Image (cartoon, rainbow, N blue to C red; front, side):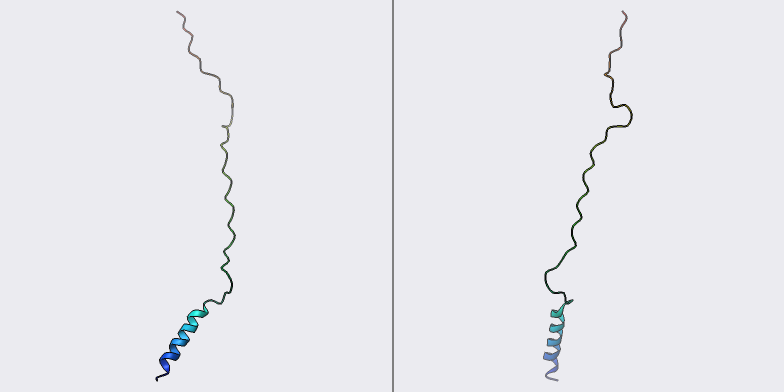
Length: 59
């Protein structure tokens, strides 16, 4: 009974230190590049707008 506590503690410590078994550095998956920012598109239809004119006054 006297050897049960140290043996159990040793077995638990050995189990905890074994981990998942992966050796070496942690390897993360590569990052995906961010999609490029969309450039603003000109409105569809007429691209040229006539300048606003003042109404002619017949006076």
